[in-house]
Image 1 (cartoon, rainbow, N blue to C red):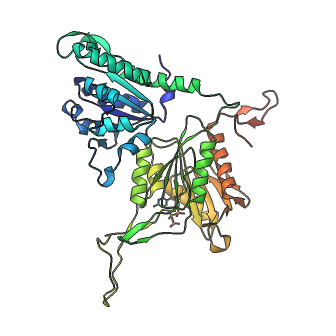
Image 2: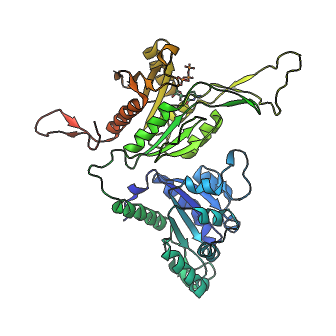
Image 3: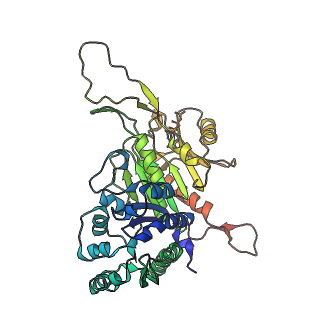
Amino acid sequence: MADHSHLRGRRVLLIVSGGIAAYKTPELVRRLRERGCAVRCVLTDGGARFVTPLALQAVSEDTVYRDLWDLTDESEMGHIQLSRQADVLLVAPASANILAKMAHGLADDLASTVLLATDKPVLAAPAMNVRMYDHPATQANLATLAGRGVVLVGPNDGVMACGEYGPGRMSEPLELVDALADFFAARAARAPQATAPAPLAGRHALVTSGPTHEPIDPVRYIANRSSGKQGHAVAAALAELGARVTLVTGPVALPDPSGVETIKVETAAEMLAACRRALPADIVVAAAAVADWRVAEEAPRKLKKDGGPLPPLRLAENPDILATLATAGPDRPELVIGFAAETTDLVAYARAKLARKGCDWIVANDVSPATGTFGGDSNTVHLIRRDGGEEAWPPLPKAEVARRLARAVAARFAPAVPADPAAGTDTVQPGIPA
Ligand code: CTP
């Protein structure tokens, strides 16, 4: 029995091509999600004959991608981005046709284009009529793909939809779940062993950072002074301790932190949508200075001065991203951390904010102009925990605040082990640098 713990927090891009076995894919998606995977689906035209996009959308709770050319609105997502936001691609069922396209590098629809453009590992579950499977062309394609490192799962022997018996049935959903778990386990075993295990390895952290820009018209927007320095530093510090980090950032003038998947957005609504897509996560750190309001109706054209009355700016409240992510439910991340930017009564306001937003910890920082926190390189914070614990940290560079916070997160997740089991209460956290 495969060790399914290797599936927690993995992002699977499931490519469903045209074969009767496509009807099993909603079940496959459910099984993967039960084990902590996020699953996003790409459906070919052939696949859509056997399973509806709606079924896959309902079980994956994500957009189902079908068209190479239809990059509109919320669902906008290029083939490169689809691959970039996945840890693994699973082609199931893999028809003789898509295997042939993969072997020969054809890219004439979204699925084949993603497969050609990806640098992520690919698993494929062949499923087809036994004669198609046995055909030398298919066998040669399979050999080519295996030679390039594509992991082939199945097919099984059995009676097929066409009535014939032999190899060609797609592996069952649970066999595919096992195959994915085995794949990640083998990869973990091959990875060079660090002297101490990274304390946040296997954890997925979602971090928001920077300001949001709320458009007034095509050239103007409402914004704030957030630089993103603190949020970006937190993302980097969590990655340093081994977490897989997704950083969702508003517009900032900072380089993307290395080893972190960075998703760039402008508005609060885009930030919330990107965060939702990045779930499931174990840890959320909401460091973004999200604009509380947006302009209710963005003007389609640049507003002009015409000597008349000033144009009214009607505002609408933005969604609260932190409160949304902290809402109880099966997908609620285990540890949700907010920031509280205050200019007076720091701790009292921050504690009230912690309760109001339903988060577990809040990092309270004084952003009154005299402190130079907004845009500056240092920060003076209090870490306040829901259980009542409170720490006042000295003024520190933002990178150091981030490292301390990451260590506190790691300590929260790592089981404490006695430094000397015989000696009593002293504890150490394995792998957490002081
Ligand atoms: N936050 C959020 N979405 C919003 C507003 C805030 O996720 N629409 C998050 C911030 O990222 C931060 C926390 O909520 O982690 C507190 O943000 P802050 O600006 O201090 O508080 P507000 O919610 O704006 O409350 P107030 O304006 O009353 O200070």
